[in-house]
Image (cartoon, rainbow, N blue to C red):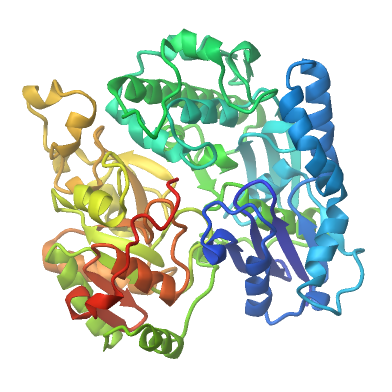
Amino acid sequence: MKSILGISAFYHDSAACLLKDGKIIAAAQEERFTRKKHDASYPKNAIEFVLNYGNLNLNEVNQIVFFEKPFLKFERLLETYVAFAPKGFVSFSKAMPLWVKEKLFQKNLLFNKLKEHDKEYKSDENIFFSDHHLSHAASAFFPSPFEEAVVLTADGVGEWATTTVAVGKGNKLEIKKEIHFPHSLGLLYSAFTYYTGFKVNSGEYKLMGLAPYGNPIYEDKVKQLIDIKEDGTFRLNQKYFNYATGLTMTNNRFNNLFGQKSRNPNNEKLTQFHMDIASSIQKVTEEIMIKLAKAIRKEYNINNLCLAGGVALNCVANGKILQEKIFDNIWIQPAAGDAGGSLGAALALWHIDQGNKRIINSNDNMEGSYLGPDYSKEQIKNNLKKLGANFHELTEKEIVDKTSEALIAGKAVGWFQGRMEFGPRALGGRSILGDARSSSMQKNLNLKVKYRESFRPFAPSILREDVSTWFNLDVDSPYMLLVGQIHSDKKIEMTQKENNLFGIEKLNVQRSKIPAVTHVDYSARIQTVHQKTNPLYYKLIKAFKEKTGCPVIVNTSFNVRGEPIVNTPENAFNCFMGTELDILVIGNCYLIKEEQDSSLKINYKDKFDLD
């Protein structure tokens, strides 16, 4: 049996993945172990986990592959400085020492780090390097259910590429077209993330969530920044940006164009202006992605589309591509960002370089993206006892019954079951759950449990067979990467007075029979739940449906703002005791907040840096 260890690291969202004979055995992000969100460091803990899960020592691994090529990245850094010189000297001089000391000699750096896992590991001859965008494309195509597909990858930047088109067939995958740095849709979106006061490489999903509160009145001004061709290709006007040469994303010319400085999140509130800005950049992003999709559908005449790269996490744009019916089928890698590069690099080595055949699964080969650690009943029980927790041990039937009753009673439930998810979304393994029918659930979860901005929407988890009766969607969406509209017969039409509300005033208007998961534009980021991939979660929602007639519950990630999703029973218990969660269901153990020792409560709200 041949094994491949895939690694992504040193930019953001470091991760590791293990393949055995091409099958995905385990994958996890480093942040889940270190508790440092978007941790970019060498993924020591993630590597230890995947090796242990695969019962391997490092010296038994056949190949190790890194998700990008550092020499090409260094070439871009040098050429960018030469192209913009003398501008950019400050950022160039800050980057250079680290490159000369470590990054340029990444093979040696990796070898030294890997030796820490296993003293028997003595040669670096099995270390390989993939291309950044090929890693992304491979992560999307090879696990997909398609024999043939066109793959669109869009992110900030890899080595040089920022947007690529690849064509995959069988075990072959080839990049056909590229757009190069500094012209980047991901960096354009990140520039607006920065401008509205959110963290780059972290807050882009907040910008997407803010967009429906605004109107795209700055669309024309956004288009002064970017020249968009009919086929979706584009060029950014570098006069307005600072990311190629400076230490910020935007500059004063950018501020002057929109009439305000970038928002300081520490002392400036979000206003209608920021909501309109968010709406405008979101609309332009959707236009570009739709034009690109139409052009590649026409050029390659292939029915299936795969998406990867950070921009593929823009589930609103994904939903618009689906709505346009450009392709017959769409599949999106759940770990679409850099974490997924560890998986893609390993799959590219196995299939493209080594010529191994693909085994195509009619769903996909991601195992529902439940690829992280899991814990036995005994481990959970022992952990909880050590923590001083009071708990009830229940049968599976009792767990489903009591949890569904708690949801109906309006309780906020921490749900920790099976393997942890790989990728940024909680999919019913490490989730906080609530009643989607509740008009107060969204606000309460945001303010009292998640400790985050009140405008942030929550996702519905729905039984796959019921999705088309509640939403204008009838495809699988297991990874919460497609946005659809609430079905017309489930909507509550707004009054004239409610329609005249502006911005955040819209938040508390009840728009549907499931208000906790209905965004201000009647949209929802949908997760379809499948009996095969997550049977217990499926049973829970089915029991909820049998008792209420509603097959939809609220699903948000099990963490507070700024915290990575919980990984261990201890993480889950700490979050439970540090927030206003009412119930914790962990394995077969059922915990009620009122029954816990009050001295175990902790100040959790300020424990993590805000994201």
